[in-house]
View 1: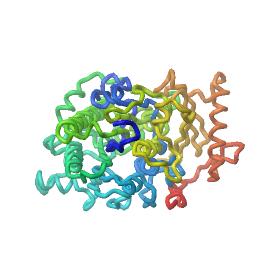
View 2: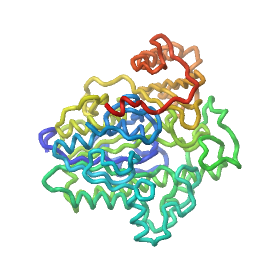
View 3: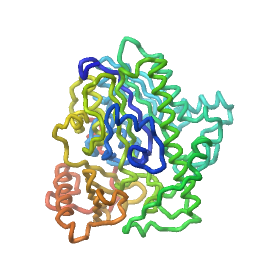
Length: 474
């Protein structure tokens, strides 16, 4: 297949709450992801990939609309309906692709097609979750995904309580393969295969739990700015967004999360083998793997997501080319985001970018063309007004602004990727901080939503809405 002359099949694989550093190709000392790692030799790996809105609903709007934060219609977490005109699947369907979505969506309404021809959701709601219906058919009417007692937003962890074949990760792969097998053979396909894990509950099958629970795990980083989050346990709610866990609780949580990442990788490997040997479509398929955001996993005594810090905002981003594509392979350090997924797929399909798209095809970065200098992310208040933020990063430095307290943080990621030392008030970095602040002032002034007057950043302590209504309808 020659690049951009024949339309490839497209497989978009996403995970939920998957940290960008939790790949062995990213240098993680414990996690093993050999199937995903191999993409670097057959495509491209972007180690400086970030979520523009590091929580599920906003991140998915960025990805499916090809727009950055604010311009996609959300700047935080909210279950809202949006105009599907010119969404990724709608555009591809209009140009002859058979569009299928399997797995975790968190789109609203839950079963709205949003341009897909077929939707098979695992959406954690009664009547909206095809996985739960299947599970009860296979394991009995009392079977439940959360029968192990873990919380889908909690830090507790244990092995999966049913047979491995009944795990939602396995079901997602099986349903994806089934739908590709049943596709319209006269059209190229676009399949979005979406895993709800490694998002909590942290419940890997027991063989994977055993692979990691006794390993020596990396030290948990705690920044010189994070003391206020050091609230001791016991008594900490299992859905807490901050607080100090015991060593045993941290070990179980982090080992289970790492095990889940490796389990997903093995199931992706199973899917790739089936696409090659059974369905014989792998050579003609472009594959993109990414996630909506990360998981703090106790870094800096923080949990869950919505933060600008690496554990929450940095995501995996890998591309595997169809056979015969003449493009450079390897690692590419340009800053990319979820808004770049849609234009990348459209270029691969030979479709011009549609109105409103702010992202760019990563093929431009791969070809060495001029690329953006930095990426912007934000999140409206979620757990607390104090944690609402804006950030800018190029993968080498990161500037964070917390509007409620008018606090700045600045990190030199080249020597401190774990963000242990805040350099915002270090005289040696004053010019760098000023430069990044001015970039944010200029960027936010263009929006006119009150965070900048073009001369300074304007603090805001109220609870502002995550919804940009006019953008949802555009």
